[in-house]
Image 1 (cartoon, rainbow, N blue to C red):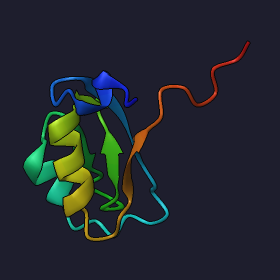
Image 2 (cartoon, rainbow, N blue to C red):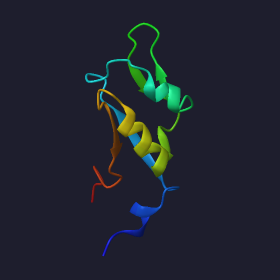
Image 3 (cartoon, rainbow, N blue to C red):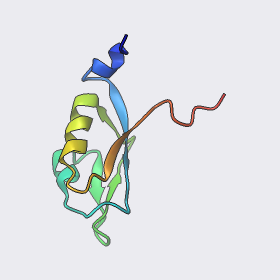
Length: 81
């Protein structure tokens, strides 16, 4: 049985930017200016604020990154116990 949260387009998900892979195309900043900012000196994208978006919008940004430098972070990663 699938997790119903995975199908909720409004669920907030954490994003990550692989700054080594980023080519500075600016798609992320154009699509989600409140979440991404291109550094004026390096041209590399960085997250601003909490770095979260609703799942549907996050998937759109991930899919539109030409360098595939943006990913959604599994919230269970690194959960110690």
